Image (cartoon, chains in turn red, yellow):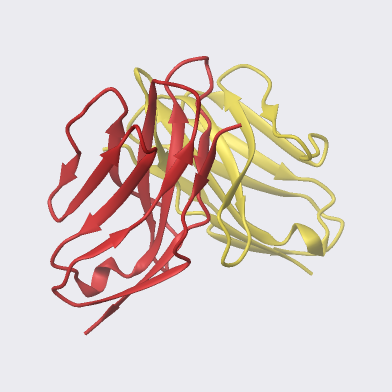
Length: 116
Length: 116
């Protein structure tokens, strides 16, 4: 079964600085999707960024970018110019591309604190 | 785009009663909807997957007779917690995938259930 591991239960960053959240996963598949979701105190899950495994180029969304290392099965999230509103739980998630399964497998999350 | 709503946002009920939670995709047709449960400070646990017009697929350990799921249309799925007990108190979140774009799940804002 696929597993997603987030090894950092908590992280903190100073406002305007850069922080990287780690995520590793285990799969025998070659085609899949990876996601980072943000869950602020409101508990609304918000899609931050998505990466298709077949794409070598790392996904970027404004201040958010990923470092996707397929061979190492690593998918870290970099947040640049951190803002107070970035404070939230961040979940890494994996989804198969084939086989009919649309299920997301989530990591346990990393709580990010942004210090003013 | 890709907005998912849930109703109610929070509900308190007496032990032994049933509670229905609605999940709606507001601006797209949802081929598949998912129901998750989240305990405090934990990750999301998938309960079941439902496709419009067919029976839901439940995850191992989830009682299908206790958590009734109906996916009556392409924009509405309901979760009914039957004969609720205090241990059913939790945060329930739904998500949906859009027809033709099944790789990404969009989440509702969640429903907090408290069973007294």
